[in-house]
Length: 113
Length: 110
Image 1: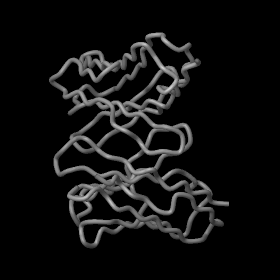
Image 2: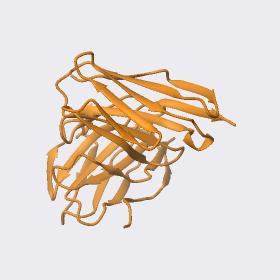
Image 3: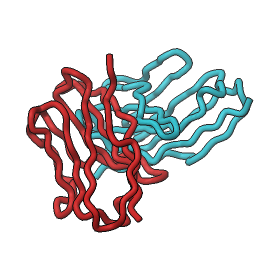
């Protein structure tokens, strides 16, 4: 079984530039999560999808961050414009609906200069 | 608001030792508690999940306990090996909304 796929693995951009991250969850997983992990910290949830619906986006900085999961499968997280403080690892995870175990992708490491 | 704390932040022990990692949380109204492992540059791998009604879970050399009343969980690793070197994170909260601790970076020295 293929795991959660994320791309790119690394991204370096200058501040004020846009950036997008892509995630393909495990086949059949209805629930998809985006987390941000700062250096030396645990992941923090940004947004959770149930199929196409964003059911928890309370932690998503909506002034610059957006996300979509149009067909209920893969998802894109976008930052526009990026700020220095956005440098972090962005993790995607997926799970079956109403199941507790989440499966994480390898993450995208973003560096904003 | 749930807060999860892990102590120590880093731990280094010789191979073969048994060790305990600690996790504490402020709100005892939890759905479950999970332990994850994270290798450098990698995502998280789920190790153990303890439901709120359970006291412990075991998988191989790993044993996790849960004491909701005191807001504590421990992860016990028996007969540690160099391959156990990683960051271990605990997380708890609602059914699908996890709050993570900052992790304990574990190094097993051959």
